[in-house]
Length: 284
Ligand SMILES: NC(=O)c1ccc[n+]([C@@H]2O[C@H](COP(=O)([O-])OP(=O)(O)OC[C@H]3O[C@@H](n4cnc5c(N)ncnc54)[C@H](O)[C@@H]3O)[C@@H](O)[C@H]2O)c1
Image (cartoon, rainbow, N blue to C red; front, side, top):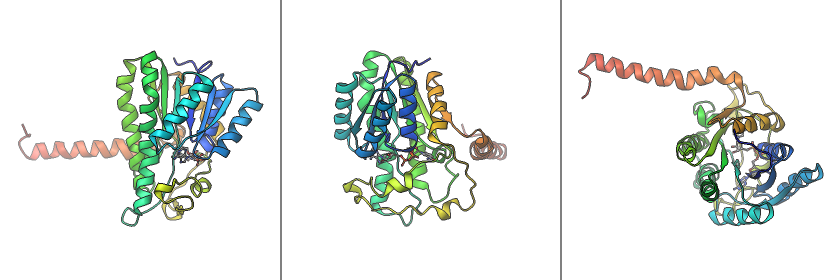
């Protein structure tokens, strides 16, 4: 059981959407919060809301694509709040492109923010937690990563998010030895500002602000999505952290999708290899 009250938390992508929902829920649960985002003005507005409501938050600029930016942000958070024992590597950006048509900048940017951003944050924050043998790390993946065939024309995003699932489930084994919990969150439709933010938050080395149009219409034409609010999903995530769950989802109606994507797909592959072995001598 991971107690949230009294801890200091660092949340990336906390200036908007799911991240700001998590930051506010953490503060309401008694944690102090570093509200980190590449858009400092958004982070400041969220921190102000928390402080006005009686919590304690500090806004920090952080670009998760850059190790140095994360290190600087961590130092600022430590100076303001002390040791961080809850990390939420939540920042993410999305795209909808055929892989044959994607630009070099977009491919690099999507992988860098979504996957390397999580890995860099884990690298920066875990050593202190390991030394203290205490803490919990969470990363935001996506249903698009857990079920990679969910949304078409979303390959780089799905790949990055599936990478996060692999990273988090695997480090869970080494962290458990140090009394540190780990959770990967796979949102399945939450009202957020990804499309609006996209125009402003692309770092210069990936083409700069305004570089990417999000053309999601073709991808979503055969999908019915229901959307929860950040305030609705944040308590589900905190509950999972308190209970040290390795994975947290937010749409219980996606069970059938899981069956189709994983259980049927993987069982079908095992059936195939079993059929091969019946037809041929089983490989030694
Ligand atoms: N909203 C959904 O339905 C949904 C579904 C699946 C996964 N997700 C994931 O949830 C997470 C939060 O996204 P959201 O939906 O709240 O969108 P959002 O755009 O509202 O929030 C994302 C935040 O990340 C910040 N950000 C972008 N690039 C950054 C960078 N390089 N460094 C630091 N911060 C950066 C943005 O400024 C923004 O505040 C993302 O990882 C996203 O991929 C969301």
